[in-house]
Figure 1: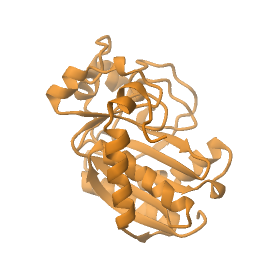
Figure 2: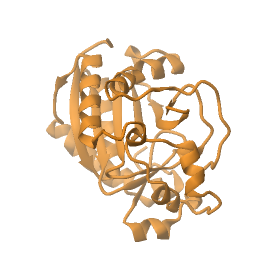
Figure 3: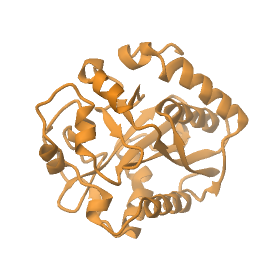
Figure 4: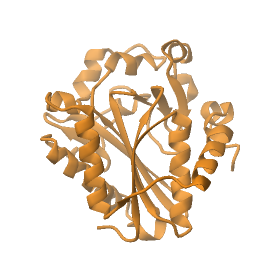
Amino acid sequence: MPEGDWRLLREQALPGAEAMAYDEAAARTAATGGPRTVRLYRWRPSTLSLGYRQSAESVDWAACERAGVDVIRRNTGGGGIYHDTYGDVSYSVIAPADEVPGDLLETYELFCEPLFDAFDALGVDARFVAEEHAAVHEPACYLRALHPAHDIVAGDGRKLSGNAQYRRKDAVIQHGSITFRSEPERHLDCFAADDVTPADFDGRVTSLLEQNPDLTRADVVAALEDALAEWAGAEEGEWTEAERDFAEERADEKYRSEAWTRRRDDPTS
């Protein structure tokens, strides 16, 4: 079990800007002596999250607007991810930097332990991909090259979950996307390039529902919350008023700004 006092924040539906701002709020809390955090969240409305270095030109902005899909930029690397409100389940693990292994691979292995516990409980055979696989489509995170450090595959070896870390001097944030139900058309429609088909997507990506058709989304959320809480020895908690205020301000100033989303220019730095 990891060090320190931990809290579990049960699944919360949030716009993309707030989802990312609350990660920063939790990191600030952990770095200043407060509880470490494990949390689940869902994206409402459905959101395309861009990787830190991703070009805004890779996005079909008009298609996203027509579909009612928000677009935000993450602090973590990788490609863009379409987070469907129903089909995606997302999590974060946030702790002080001095309590986390310095080795990146060790940290991924540690922080992903509860994910594998949950997948086992759900009857899904999941594991880190054993070897690298070439990219299918660079702008889309789920279609980028698979890496054994942070890409989780299931069944016949297709990608189920992508995970990423943002390491500040005082705290580490790991967050990830887990595919409950795959939406290849909606996912691909978010990107400007049209050289990838839904069949190409299905050839690389699987879902919990494909692996176990008897699952409900509620089953998945409950299994993940239980596994995260047991792994961390966490008590159920809630956001403080100070964290809510910080997250609302950070969401408006940074994650909703054109400067950050389109140009990677952080107005809060």
